Length: 120
Image (tube, rainbow, N blue to C red):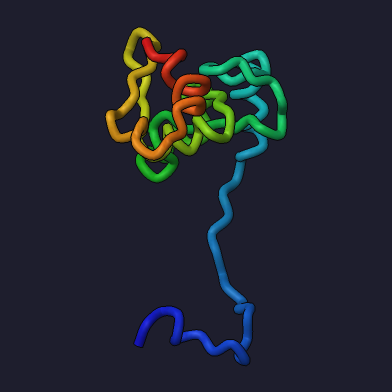
């Protein structure tokens, strides 16, 4: 049975679940954004709805660093997604290094405008 056929079109479309909720995220976001003057540390984007407080050491990896603003980067939504997926990293000298696989599948103008010009 495929995943698509496991759900009936006529059956329920919602389910009640119990989930863990992260606490302290508002504090972390406010602290990280303030520490980066409200702008993406890669592109300089300042639109608050486009900014994310990204964890350098992932949330799941170290409970002690979860709410530490020094474990955060202010990134725009696109760069946050790329960072979380290991498509770029920052060196100890805060230089951007892109994974080779990042360029594949991106239109040239996106690669040039949003990524390549921020390398190094």
